[in-house]
Amino acid sequence: MLLIRLHRTLLPGSARAMSAVSLLVSPERCLYDRPLQLRVLGLSPGQDVTLRTALSDDGGELFTSAAHYRADGGGEVDVSRSPGLAGGSYTGVDPGGPLWSVQPRTPYRRLVKKDVRSPLRLRFSLHPGHGGDTGEELLAEAAQERSFLGEGVRREPLREGRVRGSLFLPPGPGPFPGVIEVPGAVGGLLEYKASLLASRGFATLALAYFNYEDLPKDMKALQLEYFEEAVNYMLQHPQVKGPGIGLLGHSKGGDLVFSMSAFLKGITAAAVVNGSVANAGAVLSYKDNTLLPIGFDAKKLKHPRPGVVDIHDVFYNPLEEPHRKSLIPVGKADCKFLLIVGEDDRNYNSTFHAQAACQLLVDEGKEKPEIVYYPKTGHYIEPPYLPLCEVSMHRLVGLPVIWGGKPKEHAMAQLDSWQRIQAFFHEHLNKTKVESKL
Image (cartoon, rainbow, N blue to C red; front, side, top):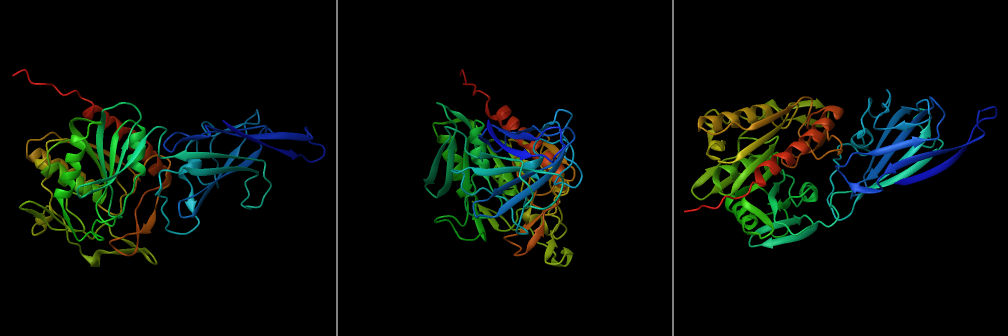
């Protein structure tokens, strides 16, 4: 537990001439998806204070929040039971509020941990009153390191055949349930979800598929054989528990997960977060099969504010001709599905796509997928306590786009969906293979 005390002098006539205010953050180091434990001691009963949170991403961009609290009768503030008051970055009782409410100093910046080998360092400071002056009196301060890489988790850069990425293995002898995490259309290698999943007991491959090392620089055309190599690598790895593996995909990664589940063998469980049943952004080929990218009507672009676009309504319906050439044959899949849907997703109509995937499976006599709908939740559903990204640059559109969601509801969806995803994979990937007696 990190404890830093600063003494403050009270005005003459106060009940106490000198008081020590303590800001306690526990533990000093933890995984990013762990709830925040933070208490303030030594305040006057009913005293108003502001708790500021600050962190910098790998590029040095500053993210901050300011929560308003009032001490209880014992002079204490506990974020697990003390409500944030009006005028601050969030309101109500929410232990994660100081974290998920941080916002960037530069507009349209998304908080992404690109190097999981180092933690994010959070700085907490406590100030009197509910003012907005950053130079105001400091009552106490504390710090915490939040990591995406758990103690003992092994990170192994992967260059196997054509496959590029990083494999994360939990501590211990294994084997472990295996998962491939397929990112959206940002390019490069993103490891923060895979490393967190490995920290929770899964052998997880963070897969890159363009704009990384010797992979193609753009996403104009993709071959599903590349993803098949990744699946086979995991199936054959001695630290991966069979007989099948899991897939986790968000956005473009979601439609790739649908495609992998439909065409490839060895997939037991697939979790899709705000994904599309239409192939998007690039031609996708596999053997004699070709899926064209879904088309769009640029006239349906909306401009909710200057310089920002809303693309929610631009895509054609893949269930209608002539756009069915983009429709992924989800009904061919033989795995279990978990579909996570942000009902305020402004990138895709994710509710439509989840319901279409359900119907495609039912039409082929398959089991209905588990679908979880989250109201007032946008496109970027991340691990817990990462802030809502309302607007950021869209790589394929070339402009800032609005992603949707309300901060508090989105934060609650992230907390719940992260637990559901882990439970889903544990349920379907930890089953023991039954050997035939024949």
